[in-house]
Image (cartoon, rainbow, N blue to C red; front, side, top):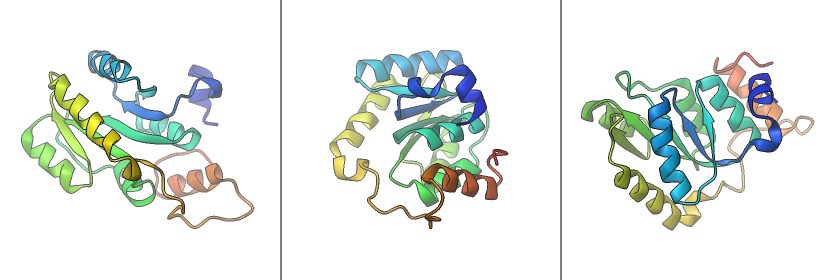
Amino acid sequence: MPLDIQEDIGISNVNGDTLVMTRDDVIFEKIERILTSEGLVFDWAETSSEGIGFLTLAKYRLIIYDQSKRSWKITGLIRYLNRYLDHIRIVALVRDQISGENALKCGVFQYLIGRNFDEKQLQTYISSIRVDTDDFLPPVDQVMETDPHKSRQEDLLDELHHLGLTSYK
């Protein structure tokens, strides 16, 4: 288990289902209100390394990923999610329309613009994901080749390390 999550949260408090990735407290509180009203459990990661740690500990169906303070660029995390965990839907918070269109091209499910995004729009995205239940479940076979002597978590950490997304080893 990643040490930062162990120290801050503890494994028994990891919820799974939805992962919110933002450093902005105001954005987090807004998203928290919406997720709570929708009855979803969620975890909050402030950094990509924390997000990766959460991905190794629990199954997520939705990630809300904040890149509203800069122009959109595909990150190693997004590449990894698209390649190995493509059942997870990503809603990106971006700073403008062009960044949103770029995010869609990179495999993001939907995007919201700015920290003052429309809350009803996020609720609509969550509802549309819920309706598509077959697509919302993790795949039976994992795409990643696994070593039978390693746990799924070890395989995931090895791949993340290979991609340069984590220093855990």
